[in-house]
Length: 292
Image 1 (tube, rainbow, N blue to C red):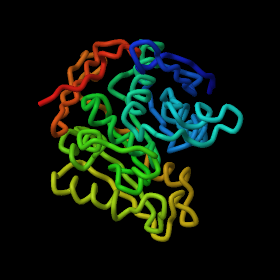
Image 2 (cartoon, rainbow, N blue to C red):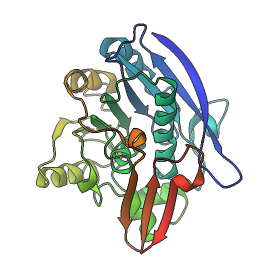
Image 3 (tube, rainbow, N blue to C red):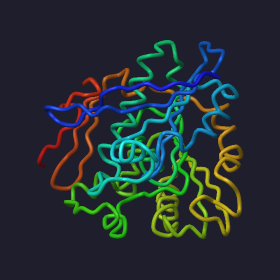
C-alpha cells in the first residue's frame, strides 16, 4: 500500500477557492477492478481519523482510499494539534461539497478506476456528510456506510455550530426530509448509549423512514455502545464486520454523476438547491440557490 497526500481547490467564494488536503492510500497492485472508497471524519476531526480502516481496506478490497479534511475542522482549524472546529460552523453543507469534490479530484488522478465501485464511509458528522453525499450525488455510490451519524441539525447541534439557520438551510441538511432521493443501499450502525448523537433523534428515525420506503438497508445495533461504539466494540472491528460483504459484492449500475455531468435539483422549501456536476471543483456556479 502507498500513502500520500494531495491538495486541490474547492468552491468557496468568487475571489477565493478553498484549499482542501486529501489523505490517499493506494493499493500496491491496481487493475481494471480497482475502485475508490471515501472515508469522512467527524466534527472537529482530521483526515487521519479513519486511517486504520483505510489501511485495512485498500489492498484487501482493491480500492483507492481517500479522506478529505473538509473546511473548518482538524488541521484546518489548528495546524498543530489537528483537533477542534471553528465557530460559526458550516455543519455539513459546504463540507459535503469539499468531500465530493475530493472524490472528483481523485477520480481525475486515476482515470482507469472502476467507477462502478465507488463507496463512502463516515462517522458522526462524517456519517451525516456520507448520507448527504448520496443525496447530492445520487447516482454515484454503490453503497454508503454511516456510523453513529447525524441525520439533521437538531437545536442542540445548531447551538454547537454557533450560528442560526434559515429554514431552507436546515432542509438541505436534513437526510430524513430528502431520504427518498437516496438510490444506493445504506449500511448503518449505532450504539444505544451514544450521548453525543442520540440514536433516538437520528439513526432510529432514519431507519424507520428507510424501512417505510422499502429501501435497501443493513443495520447493526450495539447495545451499551457509546459514540465510539465502545466498550461494546471498536469502530474498526465494527467496520471489519459490516464492510466486507458490500465491498466484495456491490457495484453501481448507473453512470456516476460526475462522469454524467449531472444536474441535481433538491427542493428545500422557499429555495431550491441546484448542483451542476459539469462545473470544476472550485467553480462557485457548481452550487446555486434559486427561489421557488
